[in-house]
Length: 328
Ligand code: LMR
Image 1 (cartoon, rainbow, N blue to C red):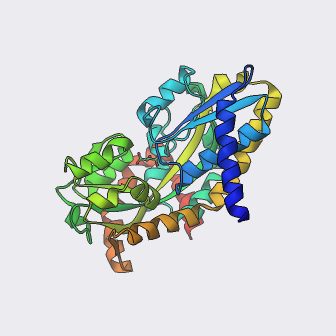
Image 2 (tube, rainbow, N blue to C red):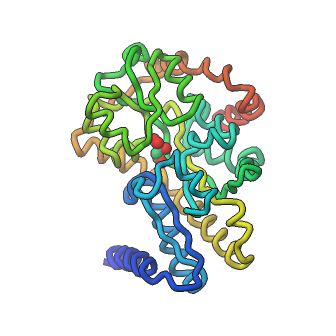
């Protein structure tokens, strides 16, 4: 009963505050591409919105636009630099035009799980990444987790050769393209909002993504099954425009920064549960999940890991070593 009324209060307060965006309040528009419930980013963005609207009432007002309703990820960062939107949380694979430091996160099999990603991001090397785009006008406020990526296709995938010759939708990342080419898959960069249709009409045969995205976008409905490869990471950077951020009154910037930090810590700690629930929801909805034994998974590792060599110059051997030390 308490939980139900708390949820109702939360959604009412978020809705009411948007309608009540008062004159003089700083308007914070956040645009993102996923669904808003049962999704790590969606839940975090909604929590951020409700906390800002409750705790900063009179000073600031936040409105979140989920599901690519305002911008796709390939438009949102430009829109931010134009001042049309103030916050976004694109995946780390979507920052190629701004920085190459995030390429470490796209390398296949570099991090064994999301806890290792978290530890790396909280190291000095990870923290420095938040400011890596400031000369390009973007300030990172925090890393938000999603989860490990899985592979799906319109035929069963047990070994990498099963995917050879297929077309897979990818995010616009050179590392991910190289990873797909390593298993003889043709990578097709495409906006997230177009993937379901492209799978359904067989413009592409497969894709890689996390459980929450495969569930949230219903990809499993138009695929033969999903193979639990856990081969890579999908994580986000909450970003804002450096000009806008530095132009905020000090008290507003401090309070907003603290709320972002608290939401980040709270939701990152809960991400394993959201991920597991999405995996289970796929099974409950009749989706097929293929589990690999250690030997079968090793064949994927052996096929994809040589990609590291191509990008060591961008990501730094010391960062690869640091990630490996965390995994150990
Ligand atoms: C994708 O494009 O597959 C993801 O980056 C979408 C998201 O925001 O999780």
